[in-house]
Image 1 (spheres, rainbow, N blue to C red):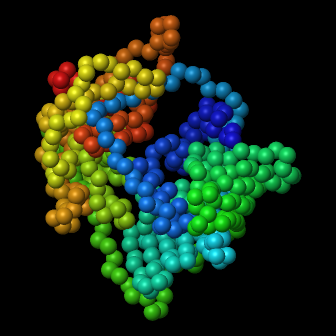
Image 2: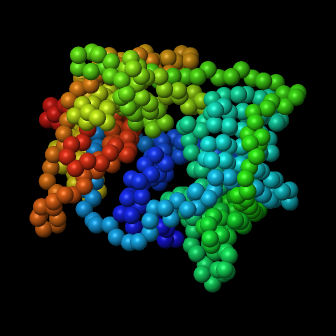
Image 3: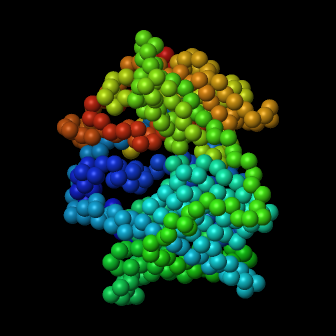
Length: 465
């Protein structure tokens, strides 16, 4: 299906600049900027909700590669054209501040299971399933176990995830021009004055039809059937969308009578400080990590304390942490957090001395020994807290010290296929991928510049050989 994003990114960018705060979040959301763990977990949770746990038996294999560092520099040289403004891309999202979804799944025994979901202003969320209820008012989250009659309050997940990217809410994004795991193809012969009809599918799980309002471009109804391998769990799927205002009491965090309240989980923190080259605190520095859920800003004392996602009990390491200030692009602080419970060992594939060139790619740098990399990591290891001795990963990291230093600069020359220089080309450091042993780190959306690109380190590649 051709989407509004296929045309006119130039006008979209102009509109984006005019309404920066709101449109920036939407534009970034259209990029692949969610953590891999959250992407994978959201898809697993969605399939479980439809077909149950019995089908989730395939082990997710761990990616094993030997490259230590790969940097991709994307050069944007093609002109923009078209006529569709960014405001049109957002039309459906802007008119969908209240979303109520009713999902009906027909089981093989003929039983129809009905589940409900509500989303208000993309921050307040409620989902009523057959055996549990989840309510998030944007400040706190209440989980009710209907079978065991237990209740537990925790921190809101709204700061850590976009609920619009979960379950059948994501289909709204599909018809507003976003890339999603759902695919749709319009059936022009079935179109009416009020509705457009599409063939729609979710990966290889189910396929069917979607009816979409011609004015708002919002989905109204979906009828689908699962793939053959899932028919032992479900025979059909119906999804109904409603966009009438949702009353606020739908998101009240009220524990029903007769329920046992479980202790509220402790808020875990990712904390430390940022200092300059003289050891003085740096206020207002942006702190970002290769885990895209962990980001924050330093206070007047140069300290940061970032709450961690309430439903992830451990931190996946290694992790890159960096700090920078928008008004001082010439300086950056960085470190690499290693897991102290992982032993150092030689990497699997040594550098063969060959440079690899790929369209839209970068350069792979390979190290023979992980210990060599550690020699260039600045600062002392922070305090890592493990819940118990058997844990593989820490639950918190404290006392990180990030010291500002001169940023490294990537230089080069942009040419066309005939080796002729291209003036005013936009250079974008789209992502940085670092693989240390069996552990992969990925950082995306690192920024666009025509002059200097802040790097995470200042070592010379020749010194690592």
